[in-house]
Image (cartoon, rainbow, N blue to C red):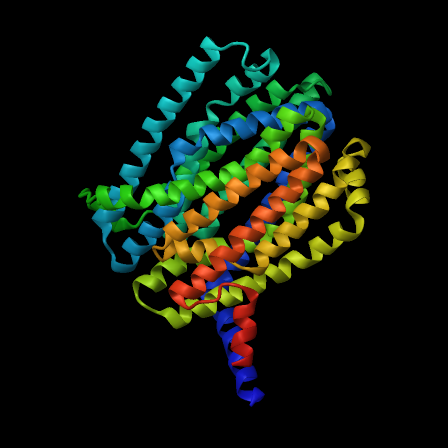
Length: 451
């Protein structure tokens, strides 16, 4: 009874290893790992030269900028990836061209509005934040359009199947340029690098990465898109879909930044620094799932469009297994030696973040176990269910932050994130089973092997 099932699993694995998805995944993985090493180097250098207090100010400013960027993005990356992949599958070039023009115009218009409102608030309410923090934030405002346009460009490249190219500008070039700029600043000015200077360097690195990404995008465009200037836009459908996706993206960003902002409100800047390095370390466990998702999410959209449900289910379950397997080794290191790792990499002042690192690592392990459930639902047109799960999880996250941070600090923020991550993963996993009859988790592979 069990031999045929084992052959089926082996055949599935062989097919995956021989597929273009696996080869693309290897390329995307190489870029992501190299970029991860560079981003880790940036975080270590910033922690060393800024200290816990300076890093806390810098991290708070980045969190505010990320929230300011929400209206500009409005969930566009997921929509652009999905609609580009669909247009490519049926070779609808006017629709693809219209989508890109519509997304770019929307980002530019909303970015201008957001920056203008932010400047007005800072002008009318100068006492809202202290002077140094205000200066750091002002220097970072150009990141609002830069990061939004970069995200849309990366989404378009992913939809075209150029997953490696999509990841290179922000995951590889931006941290590399940041390291070069930090090194130059250190050589010229010694160790006197402020949070303001670090933010200016970040804007420069983002601008350079955007320019490189634009060149890659122009090279990747299908010839038919460049030759045919006709544009077709489904503005009504896109606007209808984008609100659910926008709420998802907003909820994700709120969960990612609420911890830091609420820590800064109730605790101290150094504690924000502790949590920042802990969340950076825990994110290493998600790098494998991130690579897998970047490869398989566009395929979800194309396979759903062509009604290849069986293949879609196999890709989802094997993707979860791959992401989970890649998360476990790093998670084990953090579970056993969180304190020594922080001491070795960031220095003695950041060791108090060890407990938060362990808790956030556990949250990442749970998330990778359930696979790319977000991408599965979003790419198949069920973004409303994703939105509901994330809105509820965000409410739970903020509520638990308010309850736990005043007494437990960074560890309380980590527990709030853990509970929210478990909640939305379970909700989305169940939604995938109900709506698509697809198990996006590692259990999907186990069930297949025991069927």
